Length: 245
Image 1 (tube, rainbow, N blue to C red):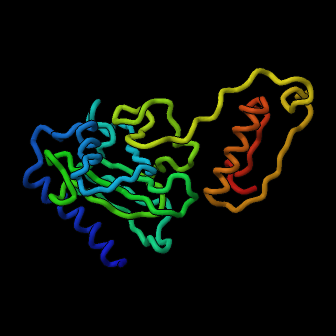
Image 2 (image 1 turned 60 degrees about the vertical axis):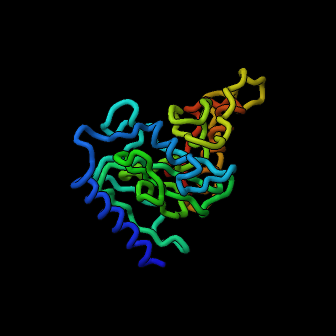
Image 3 (image 1 turned 180 degrees about the vertical axis):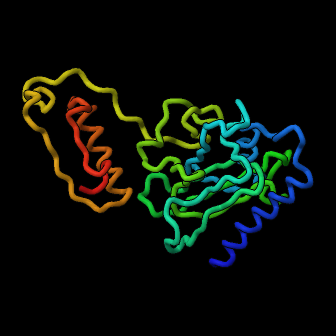
């Protein structure tokens, strides 16, 4: 299994390099972000997307201009947030050619680790599918790290107020998103931690493992203190950047 996965990654680089040498258009990519997303979501793409799944793609311009957000240039790396965790023994994916990147979270309401998919769409193929090699799919177990930067690490990052689609500014292509935190309420009455004298210390001690699951919980606690209880941001202190204290 491990050798097969490594072979798939090597093949992605080999095919990409061959594409650059042979058929990549001189004027740049032919597929826009919207066209690449439509190709992936098409029933004939060869990629099965269930109703409960989320499909994301970074709404970031990596150098190709408006309309090509999420298109990673050759030489980019995409890797799972955790390497060598069974049953997903993974290595970074090195792109040999420009590729659109999509992340499919098949169980978005579940804690990690669980199955996800890294999907690459070749912008030089007019109608890309898995069958014609224009779409490459890798089964993973984590969220992606793109060129060293985590993408949608916590579920509180997977929020949006805009409709799903290629123009969604938060990157949601298809599926639902977690509801964003509520707006701060009106100042609470006496007795709230927000109304005690500034000289008085407010504190909370949380013991937990030094992992992303704990970091996610700690971040939610901080958001609740600020947005629900009305505690000013400057009165909330975290240890080790919100990791285990």
